[in-house]
Image (cartoon, rainbow, N blue to C red; front, side, top):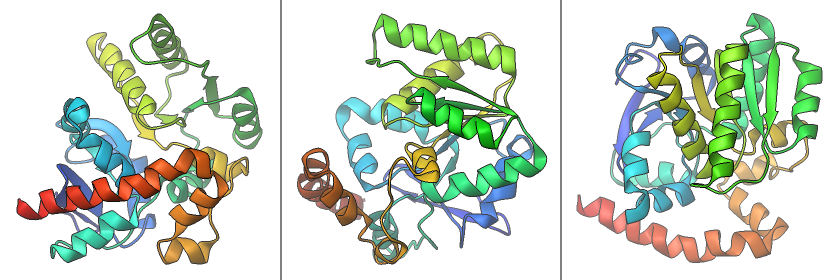
Length: 260
């Protein structure tokens, strides 16, 4: 898709938005119901990074990738994706992260006052956001695994919240892949019941970065593509597999994409 502000670049089975900055996308996101592809696309905003692109290439997640490829907004949240796009001469203009989008969207929402439902990992995050913005509601998730009765209960709770609150946006602030499966299950149930659909934004820990419960890398590290190193040093036990072993899987994916 192309317009005078941005276009899309097809890589790794996804149509990534190529835009000079997130500011270019803010109004199209806020006014998503008038997007030219709104009727034909999934009302989702996703922000795949390199680790997520690798996971979505695995056989067990290819059906998920095919579904997510229909998302209305797909942002390239990772310098390895941007660098690869330049290598294959289909350059993405910039890295567009969920963590940078959230404060822009939050500030814009305070001006226009749309209803927002936040799906958060704990009560304290929801309470802190609520203090800033009254026209929002939040649902603090219990621990759940996919394909369990708890997952079904969580889905129904969120559906009930949406029916009652009627938000324009539902922001999911939990980990990949759980937030995607959760959002898709809720979306499917709402669609089956012919309930008006909000825009689902899968933004991971962006709200936690915003309120300061998690720290992002310094801006200079972000600009040179070393944010991953900061996260690895902060959480080596959790992140070493993603960044050390994951780089080999990313190289294999690069080769696979080049062969196409």
